[in-house]
Length: 374
Image 1 (cartoon, rainbow, N blue to C red):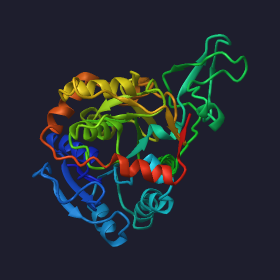
Image 2: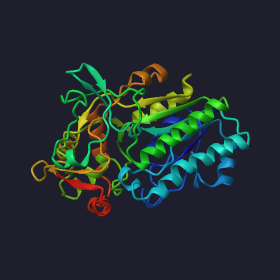
Image 3: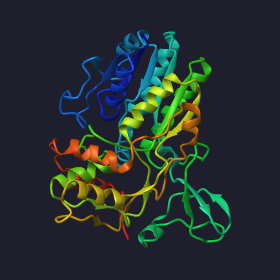
Image 4: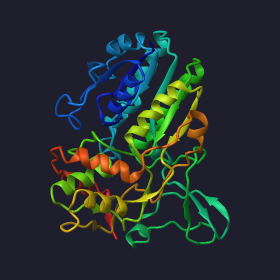
């Protein structure tokens, strides 16, 4: 039986990956430090058929023991939070970059024999997504919008050559990466280090560039997590979801069960030394997310999204996946539609306690000068 070591396997995404492996008859070991920002204590959804070790991936002795017993490494552990990473820089680099470096150092120096490695990367490494100028009839790669543009409320990108409005298009893996946060930089570090060591030591390695993941088990109390969880917490506490800019920015939302399946397929496929998008390929506006959650929680007569018309430093306008390479390399296509997935999230969310800590997190961003107004 193939033995898989899942780092961060007690978390939102990692726990679904564990379930996927267990259901496919893998022998699964989890290492997780149950970080306070995500877990108050051991979650009640842990899989009884997996072995759990409570510890930190930066613990060299622990990780040496665990890696020596593994056939496959699935590296999901990491500090998550784009905004928070911009003022907790050392923490994010230590956990994500140095933590991954230590794991790889063990693999190399202790002669750990692995059949495959899979690492959680992120769409955040792209920065802005791919754009097209219909006037010039060419692809454009846009950088961050400057403060002057944002302060004037001009949210969309314009062509640097002709000034025409750009149209977002699916973002392929070949798009130049332009990481706009410390979190994104550390995810790029994780991806590049894992692929580099995989190539050098002949360990087939796959980096999965996750787009915006949603679904059950998201930490609704964590104000630094994904927008679906943040909005859910606001709505459950009868507060309107706060939408930055005009709410028409788009993201690619993919259900966590699809993410879990993509990880298993990455292990079982012949793919090696490759990075692939894991997304639905469908753009959804933040306004649509807010409105659907309000409706599904039955709060349409009480709440409506609050359009802030301000912005956060480093935010991008549009990014959604070109999923073709994942289909080619892994045989993966998203199966759970956005509305179906949101219904699953809300059904789970109704049974959860959720402290709304959004204002606290927002004040932290403001205090660091990371929020601007138009």
